[in-house]
Image (cartoon, rainbow, N blue to C red):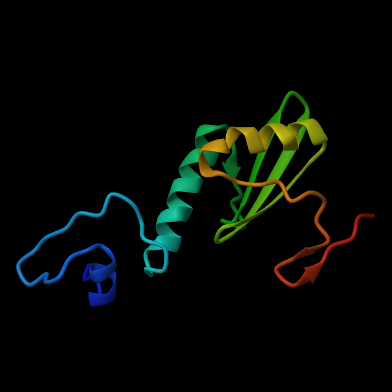
Length: 117
């Protein structure tokens, strides 16, 4: 992977003609960042008992003690629903290492208006 001059300057590197760097984390804005985030989130969701949908790779679900949780993923936006609010609340606790926020009941997501029936 070649890192642009602008990114190198942000890292404090003046010249990289014979320099090799190993990035320990994805840098926001790089084309690989979204994919790396998705891989990290996927690993975490599987680790905490979610299964990836066979028909939509961006949907995960978990059934535990009769409670269903469904998570829709679009880059760094998550849409979470479940049969019990306490399970949804607990889910956000399981992802605390990622500093995710529960924005409450959804009314819009990715430009779509969401209504409850």
